[in-house]
Length: 637
View 1 (tube, rainbow, N blue to C red):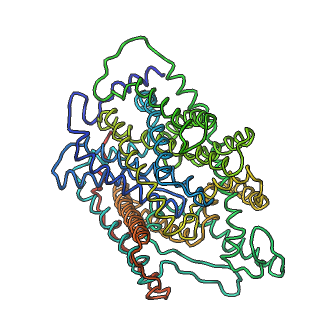
View 2 (cartoon, rainbow, N blue to C red):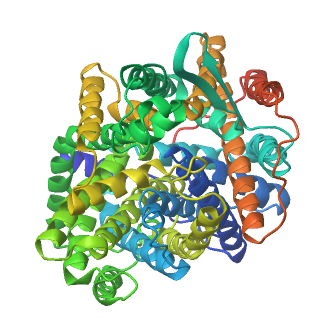
View 3 (spheres, one colour):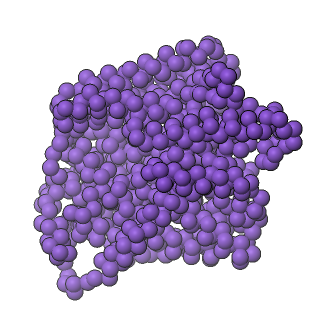
């Protein structure tokens, strides 16, 4: 059976065969890739800090590169476009790994320097690329028939249908303008509020609200109604069940119940959420992440065994590699990994010591191997990166505490190890999808791997600046940028090191996640809904409803359904990128001391609701206008 699969893989002919050579790692492609990598790194950093989720940049990047290179510069090399999307997704992956962990340092008032953040992200990113390179032939080539790599395959379809790239790019551009304009008018010029809220008659402390952000609408459209609904279910559980319940039973108490700093009778819905619900939500998210990891353990062990078995097999024959099979030589990859581990062990910027470096090498190789295979089966968005990072933090924190490295120094060291591993996982999963795209379209692997490193380098150098600016302008962990995943990592490390957490609330949240799992729900998704304000889940649900409506209206024609959903996805990606980028620009202006209006011009709830509904109508209308000729023509790859 294995021989048959290998034979099928070896006989595969990509869109651009090895016998053809097209412009690939060109100056123009690298420049455009650098620009888009920075843009999507900033956008995903902002979005991830706000809702704890990031979105894939591969298809929007492919579409934009087609529009720019093919539309503006009249370039006709699909391999150049592949390099651009590869570099762009590096920015997305670096941002995800960074914002899921490093904001905890800012919350401890241990604000790292920009150079420190960049160093942590760069070593993690380079480790992720280097550790994935030896796995490419096994996972991408030999298992071509068994590991679909959904995002990588979808991106290849976009690139192969490049003749429609100009039309597709317009969808992203429309969304980019709409999302950026609403963000600028709302949070920049303060023409109207960007949050609406109302209580419920005769239902004390019950609150329904909505952040009227186009980016959240776009996220809901992309993830669909099922996931959006489960996220909103968590929000309803928190804001219409738990908060009123705590207020009802504790309303007569005058004593202060830790961890809140005032009696429950004096707290409103936001006070109860801040003092109690966030800890319940954090416990639920932690348990949900670990449940997700446990559910993938069979796949984890089988993936690791299959990968190690494949790496150990040698046929003893010298093979001449053609262009489409030539990776960065293994000797240089080994040297690179060894140097990175040595640098981590002795670099004063991280100060994790030899123990930390060994832990990074072990967990990095273990989880990179697993992540690279799992994303081939379930996709990047479903990969349990949070769960694997939590597992790393739990083990490493215990090790540091047992070896005498405790207190704030131990917490910083443990979080640093977790951050490096998290970035490595995110980057490895991302480049796995990119290399699948390259395999299908006929890219040169070593050029893609170099492009990914350039993308990691550029994104890593700017992410520290982005986090610093966002922290000084909004505050990481604040209501504006709650950084849910980073708060969770902070609570885990603090709880093990100092044991001063409200464990009862944490366990209530963990038990809730178990209940959700038994009910057949995605416990992690519902848990995120509990942790975040319902104001975030509501607009995401609206986006999910728009997606459901588009699918329902197009249900009788599969081709029409595919075309309309793809159009909406590109438009939604533009909404996310436009709003997020303007949010970062506003933060930079605040950081530079540029006067930003303090008072909102129109304080009514009506205007922001009307603006939001206009964006909703635009998303639905443009999606439903799409004819059967899909913006991404289906083609066998």
